[in-house]
Image 1 (tube, chains in turn cyan, purple):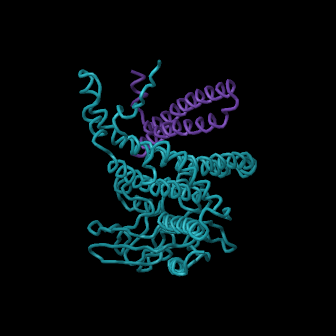
Image 2 (spheres, helix red, strand yellow; image 1 turned 90 degrees about the vertical axis):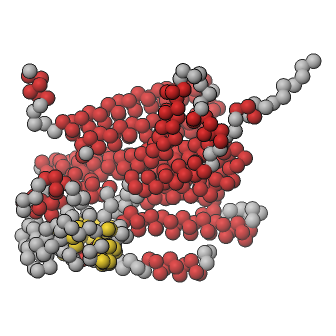
Image 3 (cartoon, helix red, strand yellow; image 1 turned 30 degrees about the vertical axis):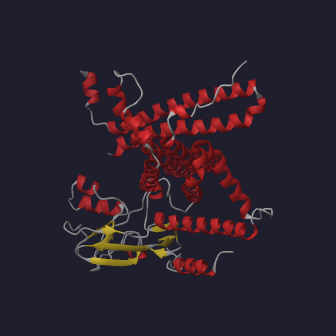
Length: 400
Length: 82
């Protein structure tokens, strides 16, 4: 189906991740986690359910895929997940590369680096750091520490790790390339003469939908030039949205950095397809002279608000959906904090709501991909439309 | 004076402001999407053959309005944490 070369490349790429989904042990509840000298780092008390930590732990980026945590028969917590490579560069310490399982979920210091967790932040507060200093540290970030596990001020760390967002994007990209190459190969072999088979059916529907509903109405006869970009954006956002709905995966599209880059690329495509007419309308809008001083700043601002709206719309929709689902499930545990019976009793309601919201989120996944692509096509079309005179050029028939 | 004491008290006003803002945005989204629904249903009543076109446009416009409401939710969250 796809060439042997591409298959070999994919096998090589995925064999870089050794699937370590064995249970990892924490220290037991009172014995502590050590730094490199074997001195205890912090205590672990039995924790009540902290909704804040759960929610942000799910929607933000992390250095491992975390599937579940269970209390084993020996009373210790076991985490089941896939640790991902950590790649660091520090001007003072050089390159480092190791698996994030060396951090043991923020308990151990490895190679002078430490993963910031809420427990570490509490430890810092107790050691006399001010609230602002502790607030400046981001959860799941990696900092350089000294032998007492206190942050080193003068060592800066640049984190190039393969976090779970990056890995999910790579998986989505591989899936997209595989799907499109298999469809293209079938077309190359058979042309349009035979009926489509298998995955080609689904791809054809989506691709002709993009061409006929998004590209042609907005871009007129120049639509073929922009089809590759529109298809890429549509499918990449769609695949990342759908994979992100599976429990245990990363929240890629609900990340402002991801949508920011997509918005900037759309912005660049819009700028490169603009013509003189477009800029003429911005800096010299066809409005009465008295209104011009107001319209020109508004038009200039409008150049930037359109991509910003694209960025924030996709980001806000996806992260809001994920947070709603997690909150509804967390309600079970919040009620469970009050009493176990209330927690159990509430769970059917919560699960029913969650299933309902899941259906809406599947709709939102498709819809947001469609809206991002559609609005990009609209803005590109607006950028290169000609003057309005040559649009209305019909000759009126002579009426005799 | 009592109002001033209440306003200056030790309450997490940023969190309250963020939550109230998000709630107001939800009201706005509800009214807006309700208007879309009303227009769509009335148009379907006038011309039942156009139901598919109208449904597609209704869902698209509703998603755009939701985008605006979620801008306000993000602003509320920023008020809490920034």
